[in-house]
Length: 622
Image (tube, rainbow, N blue to C red; front, side, top):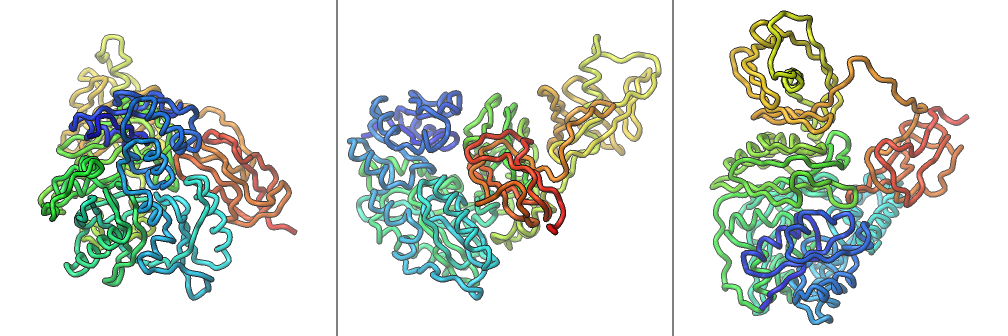
């Protein structure tokens, strides 16, 4: 019987496991890096052990340190979470060799399936050998790990070697294993997966299906269960293949078997020998706690011979600190507020006041809605996200709301190319046109010595704002009158420092106003608008040489193009520098053909947003 459990992970993952542990009466142990010293998962644990350093390779990926932490804290078992070491057979063996309990499948099962190449061999699928033009497009994938790391779609044969090298480097950095392979890339397919749960007594449960087709950079954004619109015979085939994957590896515990569905056929992709981020949607429709089942299976408890029956529909959206309009660039800073209303489930590793840093994944929370039908679940989740107050770094909240309401998604006609087709329309700026006026009126009221307005008419007051993150600038004009503040085109009903009520074309609208330093968040039932006040006269700015390439986010330079030197000729779109931030790799490319006149990027160098990386002087070589 497990009495104390260490979770070998961080953030939302650890908090999720701790929640079940508290319900079961199990004491909890956290591990944390220096960057996570004040993180929510540390605050929620009964005991916490420091892993010196901040980089994952020095902390959370050090299985030896995690085992020592468990021993030092008196834990009698380790749960790997669903990242970092969760699919590392060597770590599982080290845990067992130390006499600790292991909440996961046997090391042999992890070993068999953790390598995607070996998994495909077990399932009778062969990767591509020598790639020809006829094979294109192809997908380069890391043999280890997941989360989209080390994945590249290649549509031109001339780019294959470059993308193989990039994938190897990224996979080695993320997973400590640079093995990659190539497989056909199926256009227009849906990403469908089957959750399994297996015990040590020969029972394997296939727990329905999940659709995870809405992805950016091969990382999932919105998931749901059951996968809509699949014919019963295809669901049966998916379940049969998932059960086969479990039986061929003598699997125990929770796992996920992933497929690409196209043309009515299921193509095996891989088996993740762990719990998945999207497991809450399965929990919702089956009425289960999968973490509790993991622990019970590890303790030797037998599952019922048949799984429970699924009911209703569940959908999950991943709320990221990122700017989808800027190539999904991750964002950092203080999370001042995160408040999601409505009857939804919120799994998060952050609370108000926490800092979103550069070292780890950019996901702030998972928001999950359950309802009797799919349309009801989509409506519930979209409404909750729309009314959510998420103040701090730029997030993908608006993209999520628009995605959930997109006709292609609501009709279940989506595939993995959804964001390739629709990202531009889903990220188009749509700030509330009256938000700047509400911010200006609330600011004037808050700054008034007596909290009131003068009785005499006045000249127009002018304020300027910039909406974030799109950068649109607005000029606001309002008057003080005997009856109070006034502005053209609206009727001002009431004003306070935190709430403004305006009547626009006969409709009363409420605007909440929150300030955090210079940033202002104006909220309505339709969403938030983030504003930055601007001076009435533009301030002088630092001039940069034409062709300057700046860091789009804080991060680490992981590599520079081989042989790149100042004075070299470069072509438009040529990758020059690779920057890694928050588990995502970003290529900095030449904006035009020209000469590289300066190169300031060095591998291993930490850079802040806006740091000068290189300069390309435009113009073809002579």
